[in-house]
Amino acid sequence: MTYTNRRQVLQSMMVASATVALPLSKARSATSLTAVEWGPPYIDATKKVCENWTKSGLIWELHKGGAATILAKIRATWPHVPYDLVDAYPPVFTSMAREKWHVPLSVETVPNLAYVPEALITKDEAGRWVSAPRNVNYNLFAYRKDTSPIEIKSIRDLYDPRLKGQIAWPNAASYAGLWVVVLALANGGDEHDVEPGWKALRELAKTGNIGRIVSQNSELINSFNLGETSVTFADTASLTGVGKHFPMQFLSKTDESLKVFPAAEGWCVLASSNNQQEALELVNFLISPDHSTTLCEMVNLVPASTRAKTPTQLSAVAFSPEELKKYVYAPDWGYLSTQLPSWVQRFEADIIPLIK
Image 1 (cartoon, rainbow, N blue to C red):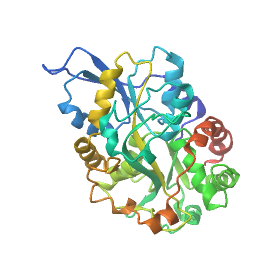
Image 2: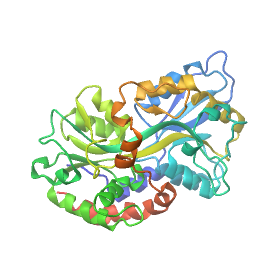
Image 3: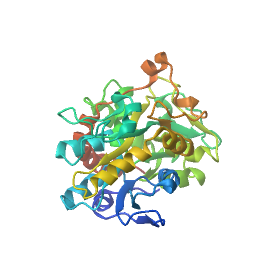
Image 4: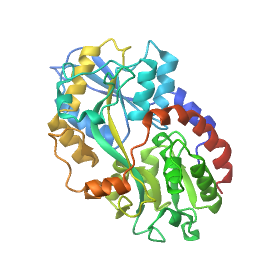
């Protein structure tokens, strides 16, 4: 069993991730944009889409240790941040808006936002648009059907002794703390009353069923591919990466105790960028209906654009109105963003020592 301790989390917040530069084509200008993107499968799909981008050079830095860690990197270098735009999700966008790190967006500056439902767009306190959503990702429980010792039907099944060492649990900086909110909801609480979740997580840690703490998509995929673990709480992009090779069961419509959390992922342009116009044009390029369709087909996600096509294999996260009410929970992302730092510390102090 391995896990990421608090020192490693803090180091990942401060140490720059590896960067990958795309070569300039003959038609490309000398300007280069630096964008922060998630690792595989996101970066592979985004690079594929950007094969047709000719207005600037592109340098990619990968998120490391959870998307929220980019906030510490920005804060440490502000206003001379080495990034022009960041791919993230609501808790990160909310924190950026609170610090006034974002360039306000609009249909005038990013025309393809006209095809994105406004409800998916993160806004600042003044109501200005912070994010340009690209896709809707769902965070949920799932398991490998061919290696899990049991069929999981409710949240209580996670405590079954037959799952000894079989659960890959997210590290403290991942998924905005939804890993404790899902347990709180199953035990009468929510993100504002999270103590039932912490109690349930302590009980789960004591069972020995958590066999690994994972901090990156690649770690989860490798753990599942090797058969080291078989149950997890993760996002659909990571889970479908495993599902390309093994039978995966998404617990999206199984029981009301197994809530599913939707998150609109996309782009934010930083106010510190010296290439804001080029960055806005790149964002518009990336969220176009055609490019959203291409990316979401490769990553297996629901596109944010109403003019893009949804992959046919995503029936597990295609909800009817009745199913949305029963299984899907939209959290208070702004509140979560204020709680995550203390939850990271609590996870290290209260949960890690209990994991056997």
